[in-house]
Image (cartoon, rainbow, N blue to C red):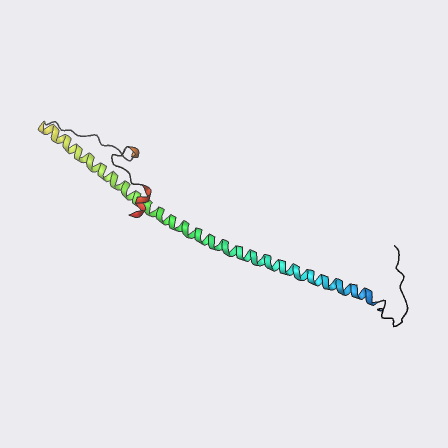
Length: 143
């Protein structure tokens, strides 16, 4: 490495003292480091604010999803309860129809009259063979 010759004169020709040049570089470097640190802190602060905003948005979305799931669970429970009631009613009506058909068979045997007694369909075993149309799911929620 080559060294730069320094002037050692202490004259008043307007030149700065020899120690002023390294001090000036040191001061500029310190100022530059301060600015860099300030920019770094600002970047980190902005990232923190962005992440806090994202957390807030995600919490709102999560709360909306939780409410939506709760509403759907409640609707499911209502439909399931209605379905259980309808299933029980169908079983009860089928039993009553069988009972009435057995009475008709007895009347037919006693009176000697021929009666047309249809077969009893079992909608619980074959629900796709129901004689009446099934309501769409959307209509169930409107009741």
